[in-house]
Amino acid sequence: MKHPSTLLAVALAGACALAQNPSTEKTAMPEPAAPAVVYFTHDISPEGLVKAYKALGRPLEGKKVAVKISTGEAGNNHYLKPALIGPLVQALQGDIVECNTAYGGSRQETSKHRQTIADHGFNDIAKVVIMDEFAETELPTPAGSVHLKSDRVGAALTNYTGFVILNHFKGHQMGGFGGALKNLSIGCASTVGKTRIHTAGRTDDNAQIWPKIAETPQVEFIESMAEAAGAVVDYMGDRAVYISVMNNISIDCDCNGHPAKPEMADVGILASLDPVALDKACVDLVYASDPKTSASLRARMEKQLGPHILDHAEALGYGTKSYRLVSLDGNEPPSTKRVD
Image (cartoon, rainbow, N blue to C red; front, side):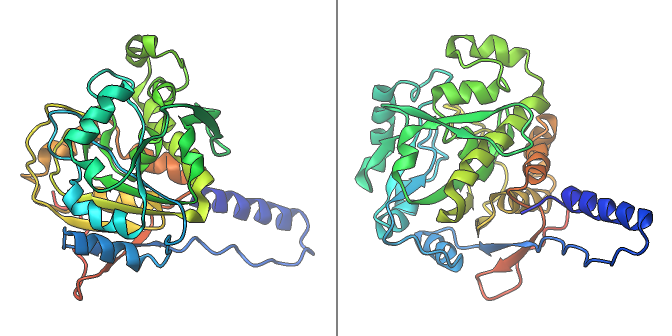
C-alpha cells in the first residue's frame, strides 16, 4: 500500500517525460489506494469481540496463533480483562504473547512479569509467552525509515503463523496515545528494542535509556515507533488481524501503575486489516466525542505529537489513514466528524 505522496511523485515523473517527448503514448494514471475498511460495534463484550474478528474475513483457525496484548502494570486496572478476551483467545487456541519492559516496574524482569500476569488472571485463559524471555531477533524496518535500520523483538514472535494484535486504545504518557501501532512497536520489542525505539536508535543500552530519552526529540521517538511497527507489520504480512477496544479510556497507558481515572465514556470495538486506518479511526472517534470529557486526552495526544505516528506510518507505505467505517450493529456507524 503506497502513500499518496508516492503516487504523486510517479504521476509528476510521467508528466515530465511526456513533455520532453510529445510523441510518447499516454499511460493510465495509477489509481489511488482504496480506503481501508474499519468495522465497528458498540458491543464491548466477548460476543462483540468475536463478531469484530469474524467480520474481517481473515480466519486464523488452524494456525499457531499469537494474541498480542498488554498484560498491564501492577496497580493498573484498565487493561483488557481475561473475561472479555478469553472466549476469542480460546476459540483460536491462541497463546497470549508479551515482552518485558525497559523502564522498571513490575514487568521488566521475567519473574516479576510472570507474577503480574498471574495476578491479572491471564494464566486462567491461555498459555502466556514472554517473547523475549530467552532470545531476541532483528526485523528490518521498512524502506524509507530514517531512524531505525531494524527492530529488535522477542524471538518467540517468529514461532507463530497467525497474529491477533489486540489493543486497548487509550492515552499514553510518552506517545500521546496507544493503539495498534504502539502494540506492534513498543509492545513487540524486547527490552533492548524498547530502548532503541524510545531513543530513536541512539542506544541499545538499557542503563542509558533515561538520559538518552531526555536528549531524543519527541518527533524522532514518534517516527521510530512507526518504523518499528512497520517492521512487524511487514513480517506478519497477511497473517495478522488488528482489533482495538475503546473502553476505560484513561489519558495514561496500561504500563502506568497509577493511571488517571478515565474521563471519556466507552466507545466500542473496532477491527481492520490495516493498523494505520484502525488507529486513525480510533483517534477520530476521540475527536468526535464530547469535547469536555475528551479534552484531557486530546491535549495529551497533541502535546506528545501522537497523531504524527499515522503520518509517518502512511509515508512508509504499510497502511493508510483513509478508511471507511462499517457498523456491525445493523445501523449507521458513529460519526467521526470532529467536535470542537
